[in-house]
Length: 348
Ligand code: 5GP
Ligand code: MN
Image 1 (cartoon, rainbow, N blue to C red):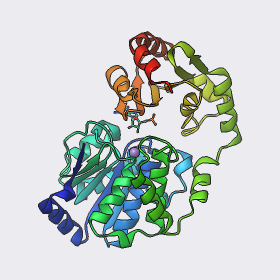
Image 2 (image 1 turned 90 degrees about the vertical axis):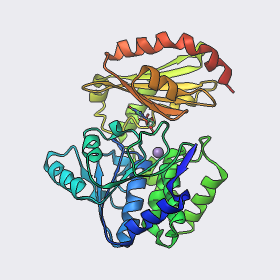
Image 3 (image 1 turned 60 degrees about the vertical axis):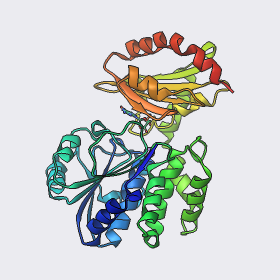
Image 4 (image 1 turned 120 degrees about the horizontal axis):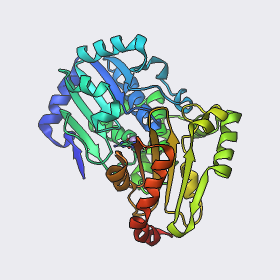
């Protein structure tokens, strides 16, 4: 399914008119931003700045270290920062145009959701998550897209603005596509994805350097924590084709775990031969954060949505639980027999 407002001539013209004169624009993406969320924000930040707009990037939360090098990040306003919130609220209320990027449920931007919903600005939604909510005036959405950054590349071309894809814009778009395709590994990696990546590389970006900045920046504590998690906190349920990690607050304290140190850990579960679903349960102060990953046709989005107050994509989803860590894992284990048939069918 896809919905491109640019396919409708009137909507395209209306949007073109909006961008034709200088506007106050707010860009935002989902909480705990990843490479695609920030790639989306900062590609448009660099692009719209070139067009003479007054552009502000507001994130519903802070970000992890691995994306802090991205061009434009130093300008981001963190909505959770008490010193910045007032300014962020004012900018949202004064904005003519708000871009909601890489999310399509307002709950994904926390307390910013209600403020944006009640703003008078025109809202542009660009996203690839399932089941979008209906809150935007212009929707550019395709759940089969590999990344929101892929959609932004297409949108830029639809608007005949590809001459504005400079080094910064290309770096951001490439980062979003790279991270959301699991380094060009997921099913979403289509010929078009590689063609777009090729066009971005042709703008002079350095894929090797981008990869190293994203993936080879561990602190030694963080790498040791991964070793610990793999050795001590990974359970492999061979009879179910399932692997899962449980990370307590105590574990995180012991290894000085910071935001982002658990990022990607869940994927290691899928590297075990035969594993169809990998899950990580991470204890936070207030709730248990869960990440699900799967292969082939096993939908972790369904599991996250129906049982763990979450959602996402077929092969990568997330959710949460207000139970204790142990109770959450027990709940998960009790569900598994219902999924066993499907889990055993998908193994390759
Ligand atoms: P992650 O496991 O990396 O946090 O999230 C993987 C994907 O699941 C994200 O791209 C996001 O779409 C989705 N996701 C994660 N947490 C939630 C959640 O609490 N609610 C919903 N609806 N989706 C989530
Ligand atoms: Mn994305």
